[in-house]
Image: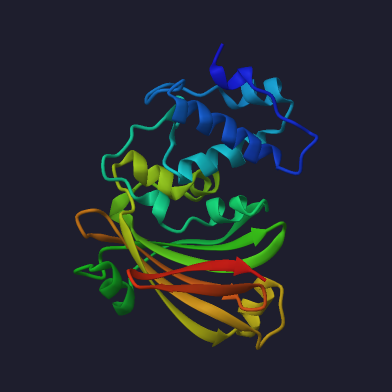
Length: 258
């Protein structure tokens, strides 16, 4: 029997069922019970064994994909990922991991999927040579316990994953699909600015037009310095605050829900 199926979920705790499943799989990987290349139980096996829904299983697997611990191969199953020697994705911001660590439930809704010619600004950010190098545009609303928190729009060169479709994006973490191609986040730079939400932006985030927000721009690069992601996010200012920590050896910050 697969070692994952030898554990049990508890209904007598506030920890969400999907996050309990994440911890079970993560523990088996960390302990070496599951090794790189080992296959995880199928969705149907985990649903039957733990008496949970497919959406719960998929949420758990997506979180593990975001962490780079597993990789899904279409038509074959989900496998324990090969560790990267210089992988630093765990030190970069992950919405799913950050919100889950607070004991809250993250979710997302894709509101726009498009393939487009890059604007001059996008070309500059992604260091593209020509407008003929098309880019994907994904817009998502990020939720915390069902409440809209972030409006996130990301741009990626289409050449990274030429055959991507909207159903694939809705079923998989794009980071996990890129991981299959050997593309891993190594470093990122965020720029913050205080802004006022437009009527449309406020509608999507469920707050009043004219509400304050943090506008965040991020450029993410691979280990060889190549930019592959440009993201623009609007974070509700009434629900999030930034804590900045100043130390002699550097500066760090965290985002907290207000």
